Length: 253
Ligand code: FPP
Image (cartoon, rainbow, N blue to C red):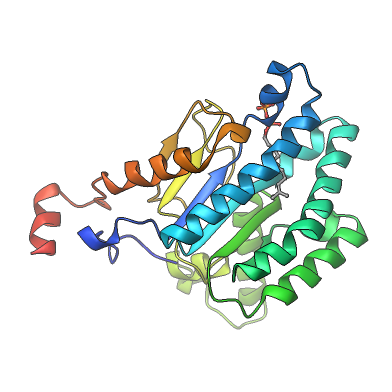
């Protein structure tokens, strides 16, 4: 976890280390073409593949994609089933390609609610790619930022209850360590496609200092050029982490 104060972006660090994406707009993309919403989700898998490749080429270290939120269970049962099936099919079809590209796959979220077969496939896919040292592709599935903060708080409370920790020792670092993905840097760039400008409960704690990038482009239309445009936009940002512009300048001298 990074707190921001140690992360002043030098001119060489114009590539975000960690990119997080809310892949929104699949349903509208399909509806605009007179297709069922599920066709949009299928097309969305292609965008996942393209974005993964651009991130690998550009030297992004971690890519985290919001594939299924804790709130997505409220969608019609047929759409939920399709999303879960698609996840399974995509894992089956893409895992060789992911492995060949030296990408390490990790699924973050409460996967215990998923069908057994999907859980099993996730474990196998993570195991297969565990030693790859290229891009880390994190798929957030049955994930919610508030769920993440809650499970971290519960974990710390248990440690206090067991006498392994003093309540007064709970601070930002210990909370951060108890959150999902605490072994990777916080997102530098948070992208949301599909025109809405909100976080939708994604990586709430971890995105405290992320640069936000919103685009009207619907996820299935988010191609290589759109991903590169987001990285270019990030490169032009001044990240202050609470400091003044003058402090930033003197620290980079
Ligand atoms: C939001 O679009 C998208 C989702 C809820 C699912 C995202 C899933 C994929 C891109 C495919 C599967 C991905 C993996 C990693 C296997 P929406 O349905 O809310 O679109 P709308 O806002 O236009 O209705």
